Length: 291
Image (tube, rainbow, N blue to C red):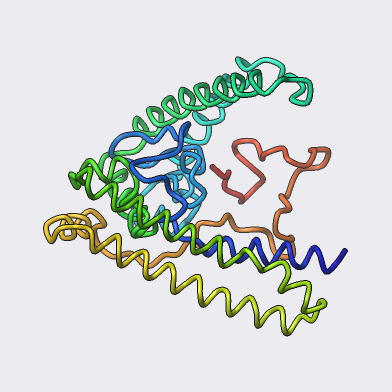
C-alpha cells in the first residue's frame, strides 16, 4: 500500500511539470472558464485551466499586494463581495441530485447547467473586483500575471486578441501543444512499471523522478521555443511590453501562508468548525482572510 501511495505521489509530482502552454487550451480557455476579456479572473482558480493564474490568487501574496499598491481595506471589500456572490449562487443551485442515479445524458445536462451558472457567477465577481480596484492596480496585477504565466499566456484568447494572433499561428500553437502532450503521455506510459520494478527503493525512485523531471523540462523548453518562434518580431516586442516592469515572484509565493507547524492541506479553523469550511471574513486576530 505504501509503495502504491509513493508511486501515485511521484506521478502526480511529475505531472505538475507539464507547462501552462500544454495545459491551456489553444485559442482561449476551456468551456466554463469565464475569462474576462483583457484580464484575469477573480474569486477563482483561473477558469478551469490548472496552470492559469487568477487575480485573486495574486492577491494572496503580500509581496504582490505591495507591488500593486493594494490597500488592506480593498482586500477585505473584495472578500466580502466574493463571499456574497458565491453564497447567492449556491442558494440558487438548489439541492444536487445523486449523480449515480442519473443517466449519461442527465449528467451532461447537469454539468452544462453548472458551467453556465459558474460563468455567470464569475462575471459578477469580475465586475465587483473591477469596481473595487483602481485601473493602475488592475494593470499592474495583469502584468505580474503575464510574467508568471510566461509562454502559456500566448494560448489565452484575450492575449491572442491583443497580439492579433492569426488563425495560422493558432493552428501552429495547437500542433505544438498536441505534440508536446503526446510526448508527455509517452514519457508517462511506462512509469508505473518502472516504479514497480524498483521495489520501493526510495533512492532509485528519486533518481528516476529526477530523470523524468529532466526530460520533461527539455520537452517544456522545446515547446516554449517553438511557440515563441511562431510570433512575429512585432508580436514578441508587444508581448514583452505587456508584462511591464520585471517582478521577482514565483508560483510558490502565491500559496497562502500556513501557521507554523501546520501540515499542507490542513486549514486552521475555529473550534467547532468542520473540515472544508472556509474562514469567515475578518478571520482570526492578525490573520488576513484568504480570497
